[in-house]
Image (cartoon, rainbow, N blue to C red; front, side, top):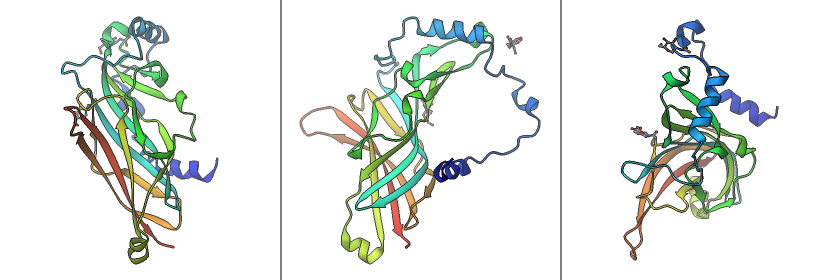
Length: 240
Ligand SMILES: *[C@@H]1O[C@H](CO)[C@@H](O)[C@H](O)[C@H]1NC(C)=O
Ligand SMILES: *[C@@H]1O[C@H](CO)[C@@H](O)[C@H](O)[C@H]1NC(C)=O
């Protein structure tokens, strides 16, 4: 394993929970294969992954978070980061009664088999690179709640002021996520936390002093549509 993987693993703080049976007595683990196969078949019989799920209010809410961010490098105005791109939403088509399926209350489904919000970093220099992403699974709970946490890695432009860098040794870099083809009334992103959970720097010259997450609502003067983005800011300080 390379150093980076080892360092990432270092983030995963696992605590002993004592006796296992005490914690899992109320569920069936993965459940029986037959039940899961029947469930998956029933759920996907008419499922079209290119269509958005239905929602009572016509707006699909997506809770977004960035976690376990690693600053790989900051060089020549380009920040390279890897992170978990966390998204949670409800898909009304993926709802079932566990008692009809041997108490199976969650299914792990390849992300490429389900609809997912087209939520992307805009203004990145190099689009997604690195991890073999299509093979990532999403967790689907029986109430239709989907959790998807693909690890991603990308480079973003981070224009900075030479003078600021010279006088304060500090730089602010932002990463902006936006829904590609939908307005904010169709797919509405929300931030799950005011900052990024767990940040680490592999670039010994730069320390991540703080991070911040904000949601912006934008309106063009031309039209009634509103657009939303979520913007994560990395506050970097030169330490070497
Ligand atoms: C998003 O977060 C809100 C507030 O914490 C919560 O009520 C809602 O159920 C979440 N939605 C999803 C899809 O996770
Ligand atoms: C499902 O849960 C119910 C209630 O806890 C239990 O009576 C039943 O035996 C369980 N079925 C399976 C297949 O585990």
